[in-house]
Amino acid sequence: MSTDLVPLAVLMFAVTYPSRAIGLLSPAIDRLPRRALDYLQLVGPAILAALAAVNVTVATTSGHPVLTIGLPWLSVIACIGIVTWRRNLFLGLLLAVAIAIAGRAVGLP
Image (cartoon, rainbow, N blue to C red; front, top):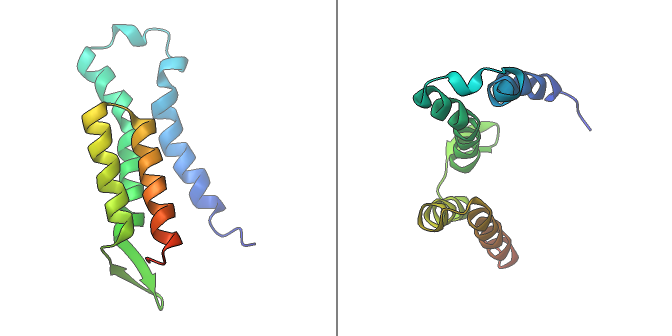
């Protein structure tokens, strides 16, 4: 097992956690303008979405990154559709995982 990505994980933690924990760390958070609160609540999901987009669209073959379209795209689109329609992130993620499992079970890449 390699520990090459541990510094990256620490950096990701250092960037994302403070923005999510600001509500716990600041007693006057409720006095911020509503727009600022909305922004702070969406920072974490936006970062996760950016990481997911890279993992879905970029594959590394023979050491070179290549843009791909395949089963992960279907999973992400289904997840976004369910979350938008039903306003239920858990249900969207559950559907995305089910699509990925079923696709891999039948041999899709």
